[in-house]
Amino acid sequence: MAEEKANELFRLYKESGDIRVRNEIAEKYLYIADILAKKFVGRGVEYDDLKQIASYALLRGIDRFDPDLGMQFTTFITPTITGEIKNYFRDKARVIKLPRRLSEISAAVKKYSAEYEAEKGVKPKVKQIAEALSLTEEDVVKSLETGGVLSLDKVGASEDGESDGSLYTLLSDGEDKYENFELKETLLAEMRDFSDTEKALVKYRYVDELSQSETAKRLGVSQMFVSRMERKILLKLKERLQGLV
Image (cartoon, rainbow, N blue to C red; front, side):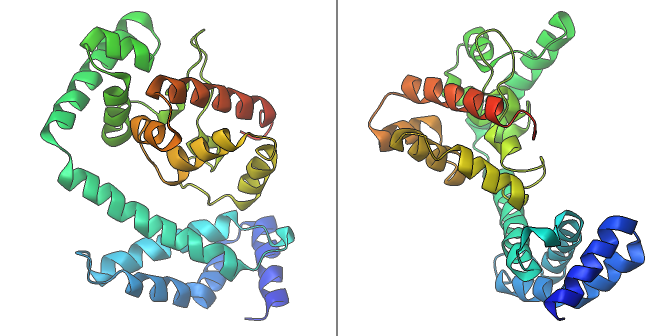
């Protein structure tokens, strides 16, 4: 499909929301979903399931793509579909390999959080959960990340109880990291004046997805230092991107 003709279809779909136009675009690019699905065959998931995941990611990518950004759709959609498939494998692995202790912590955190919210009307902060259950903040965060008890948006809460937001939110529209190209570029621009340590922390925590303790080891600092710096980074980015999220 010629790029200009493709962009015309994307503009038409963006203006009209006509599902028939979206389906026409999808048919033209379905081969990309097929190719990427085949790359992950042999890892314990059937091809048909992978194709379904890739096809769904393709449709969502079509909904999000803006032809006026100056990027070809093939360039945009390839990492989008790949990321969706990788997320599926990661989530599947977490379900299968979730350690017993972490599973028990997750259940305890879920129970405490529900009771706290029912009584106070607000969700508890990580520090409050850790103190109440005699856990480390790192254990609580891990249980939140794997158990889905609380949104990671709440992990960066400030001392006054207000949520500082989450890089998972700032980097995307809440469904898939890095799928919103325009917002990602804006975020990277806002990080240009960050120190090398701040940039490294963001990379370790939100790109490499390391825990706070693992990040602390990489940076040669304490876990508390990482926790405090992460809060400051989240607050700084929230203030700068207030109009975008």
